[in-house]
Length: 310
Image 1 (cartoon, rainbow, N blue to C red):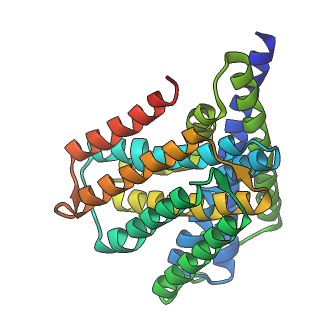
Image 2: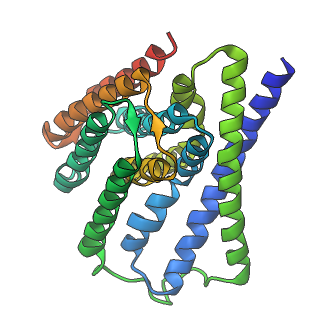
């Protein structure tokens, strides 16, 4: 009982570290980029998109280094389920969402292609360094494409800058990065402790405990976007975050320490790929996500969560 409580305390503390650490990192990194006159959109598609994936990166890298491959992979898959399943489903139920053509043709199809590639790469129940390198190259190409598309857009001028980058900002940036790394270690240790005490498999833990904890930045963005009625920003962030999770987070994890893929993990990848296909069909249907489609997306995501606990 005492061990379980300590593990739960680790998870709760990690959530605070991951949440506040990623918030400071994104905020101060954006301020640093603004100081050097980088466009707002460029900051959004690079610093902020990658920043919201920092918790997943910390947790999955820690899991891979500690030889817990199922936890590393399920954290990424679980976070992507939260992003384009639970978070998106709830947002669409609150307010239907218009779909941009480029979101389907660029981000949506790329995401589906990456998930299919991962399914094929996992058929031998192993993810190695070659797979990780390919994923990182795909991420590099994705960033270059975004920068080419948006790089010429309006840049931040001194007048539009809310604040300059100070020494205090630099300290907060370093502290934020340290908190994210520490939070990633704590959430892995806490999840493994809970799993050992309650007999829960690593794959189920990754889909639930670590995925929820590392998805907090996206949840915050979701709440803010819904309140401000800017669901298009929400949708772009969720699509981009899923791409970064697969290519950046999982790519680095595979490159750092190749790991075995369990049959449950392969089944989870197949189910996630199927949900991406359904989402793309919903996106193309009238170029709009309706409330009924949001309900379907949410229910399918919840079913997947329950399925791996049975």
